[in-house]
Structures are given as structure tokens and as C-alpha cells.
Length: 82
Image (cartoon, rainbow, N blue to C red; front, side):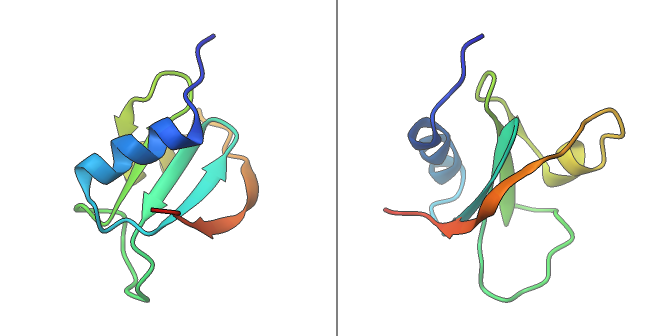
């Protein structure tokens, strides 16, 4: 199985929105978002999910609202090093 690295996922995310400044790692994905104190419902371009297995980009709701997915956090949210 090919797994993308955090650096590869970060590049993909920043191409979509260069304002992303924070990420959270999960067992099967990285979630990138803008941490500015604004509460978001997961829509728009304020966040994106990059799957580790293939680099596919998912919306927040496609990832977190999928009842068939076992979501496991790894560590705490971290700032993106640009």
C-alpha cells in the first residue's frame, strides 16, 4: 500500500488553500484547516481532508460523517511549518 507523507499531504492542501495553518493527523488521513477561532461546519474552503492511502482530497463531511469509517486521532493539532 502506498502511503503519502505529511509533506506531500501538506503540499496538496496548501495548493487548495494557502491559508491553511494547522493540521490534525488521523490514522488514515490528515485534516488541514484555518485555526482563527471561527467555528466552521466543515464547508467551504476552510478545511480539507487528505487520505494517506492515495492523496485523495475529501470534504470534511465526506470524512467525518462516513459511518463506515473508523476515525482515530493521532496526537494533537499542530501548526503547519511553511
